[in-house]
Structures are given as structure tokens and as C-alpha cells.
Length: 554
Image 1: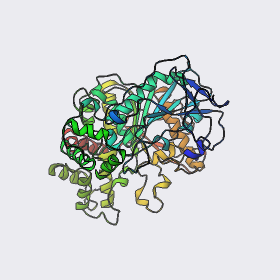
Image 2: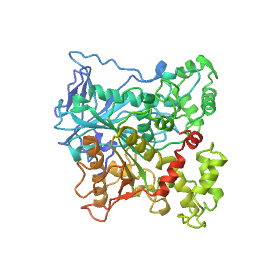
Image 3: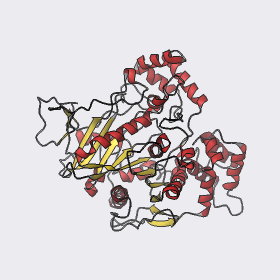
Image 4: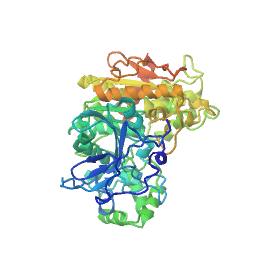
């Protein structure tokens, strides 16, 4: 099903209504006490929908501009009033500033939330809620690229939510002069949005006590960070979580953060240190900040350990290892060939062990010689006796995938089940996204983001970029949406699965995961269960060991 931002809301060209104007007669309205939200009933094809209502561009915090720039999100005035103003909530809000950034594209004022609900849902229905956190390496991403209409339309028994959060320099600036409570502002944005859901989702028919968070890539990493937030010392505003292709780059070191901050002050002609530097940056023009953001390599402004009492008191791996995280029901997994997307070169150019090592060091420059040597041993060259790898490229992308995407899911699922007994499930997504270039570059396989294509009706995380799903793609799309929404509804992805889908068993005690695969018939898929090999478990034990995660800054 094709979904574009313009097709959904093409007639809506203005931002707000006054109370004098009055709502469009057929438009749904939700009264939050402090504001009335004027929603939309338009389907992805641009025609009126009788089954799903949309409410977008809902502020969940004050605009993080001026003196609030580079600070934790600040609450809105949500005091109830007799005649609340009407807010036009029929469209998405602007995306947050991206990296690379372009003047006029995106906005600092981007802390908005979007809600899709069944048209029949009303306050008191207590429907389960699922909240999407977009990926993009913490440098880019936009909620409008992930339409959730199909999730609600297919089940009619969930409320779907997406949120915007600050990225790159605007969300992850680090300076010794900053209040530690303001560090990792982008993660604090996510938390503030989830707390807004707790306060207000009941007005849409949702149950604040049955919230599931979900994200892919950096969004998958964010779900893990929300699980370990505050070292597990504060209750979390959700009871379930889904992590797809958990995308961890190395967290910036203190030295890297200091250099990124210095580069930002140089680009804006601000003092290099002290409170004066922050005051200057907060007063700087957006144009100069965009220039500053663009000269810092992507990833140098990203989540970082912010110290005791903050949202990220230690690295996620350390917190999980120590059991300092929230115990929630959990689904986690990755695409079959996530690693190919992040391997430099092709089968024709990655030809030696030196190429294998160069790829690892490019991503993980802090790896010690001992760790590199162990990786060489653990991933034997294709000409070695008994090696499962047919090419150096195959060997290389597998190591890249394990270190970045493929092992944190199993690590957290194991710890959750062992320490709490909570249900955990794991998966491997095994059908390529046809937009990824796999047709011309078949070695890419089921690359990073393939699951996103099927979850969001042919969208690939970019507003306006989408294709019409064919009949067999649609069957797989329905399957994964059914699994996800079933988990949100019951804590078990099989309870409300599609009839043709395999029964997805718990990870703990079985060592099995579901492999979601497109079939040859519109009446089903080729999905199945598999046992994770001892070789894969051995590789993941290596990457998630305390010594190696210290080097990779996970």
C-alpha cells in the first residue's frame, strides 16, 4: 500500500485553527483538557477512511529553542481549561534537523507526537499502545517516513504512536559545562514523549498501562537505552519492547566529544570552554549551527555515557550485564544480512584477511590486537579447513553484523529471561527490501532495513518514498504486523498471528527464533522456526564479553 505524506494530507496547507473557525464537520476531535486536537480521517490512498483516525503534530514538550536549546525537554502547560483552543492535528510536524543539514529543511521545533487510532476507539476502551522510535544513526530520521495506518487498520485493536526526537548536535551535544541532566537530550525527548503517552493516550482509547516501544537500527538501540535508562532505578513508561537490528556504533569517547564540541564552537565563533560557550551556542543563528553540525563527522554527536543519576549512567552492555535495567517482555532480532550494508567493498574487492581487519577497525577503531587476533581465529578464512565462509566478503560482513546488529538482541533476551523470567522472543528477517539495490547487487542479500519496508507498507523510512506491495509481499507484511501487534496486545506474538504464520515459541529454553520469509503465494509465507547454531552463539559470546564491549564502547 503506497503511503506518501502529500497524498495523505494534500489539502491541508495551514497549521492551526482558532476556536472561532470551528472544526471541519467530519473531522474527529479529541479533548485533552488543555487543548482540542482536530484530526484527520484520510487513508493512505487519499480517500476518506472509515476505520482509522490520525492526529499529528501534537507537541509533547516546549520547543527546544533559544535558552532551551541543548537542554532536556521542558514540560508544556497542560493545565485543563473550560474552553481549550483547537490545534490542527491533521498533518505531521516538521522533521528535526538532520545531518548533513540543509538550511530550510527540518526544524529545531520538532518535539511532536503522532497518533493513529481505530475510528471506533473511545476513552475507556483501554486498547494496547505501540510506540515507534525511528532509526537513522542518531543523525537523521523522521516519524513521517514510518506510517502506522496499516498497523491499526489491520487489527483495529491497537493505538499506534510515533514521535520525533532531536538528533546529531541538537540532541547529543556534550560539554563539561553542561548540566549532566541535559546530556543525551535526544533520549530524554523519547522519554518525555512516552510520559506524554502515559498522561494522555487514554483520551484516544489507549491503555497507558499496556505500552510497547519499538524501533529499528538506531531506533532499536534507543529501545535498549530506554530499557536500561537510569540504570533501572526508575520505573519505565512501558511494559514491552521490540528491538529491530539494534544499531550500535561505538559511543563517542570523552576526547572525541570534546573535539566535536570544540569544532562546533570554532564554526560558530563561540568561546571554546565554559558557560560562555554554551550561552553563545544557544544564542547562535540556526544557519551557523547547521554549518557546525555538518563539519563534525556523523556519529560524533550521539548517545554517550552521561554519569550517575542520568538517563545513561553506564554503557548499555555494562548495565545489562549487571542486571541494572527494566525487566520487560521483549522481542529482538535482525535481518539476515544486516552486515552487508555496513561492509566497505564488494566480493570483488574484499579479498584478504587484511581487508577483514580493516573493516572491523573502520567501525571499531579501539579494538586491541588481542581482540583482532581472536576475531581472525573465530571467523576462519575461507581457505581454512572447516570454514563456513565461502569468500572473504562473506566472512567480513558476518563479523560486522555480529558486532553491530546480531548479538545485542540475544544478549538482552538471555539476560531478561534469566534474571526476571519475562517472556523473550527472537527473530531473523529473511526477505530483502527490493528498494535496497539487491537486484543489481545480489551480494547485499537481506540488507539493513528490509523489515522496515514490510512493516510500513513499502516505505523505507523516508516520507514520500514508497511502492505498492505485491500480493506475496503483502502476505509477509500482514504477518509481521500481526506478530508485532499481537505482542503488544498479549505479550505473545502468536496469540493473534495470521493463520498461515508459524507459532513463535519463546527464546529461553528452546534456542529457537522465527525466520520471517516471503513465500510464493499470496495466501501465506515461507516463514519457519530455526535453532540458532552453536557457532553463532559462540561468536556472540565473544562480542558481548566484558572486555570486548569495553573496547567497542557498547
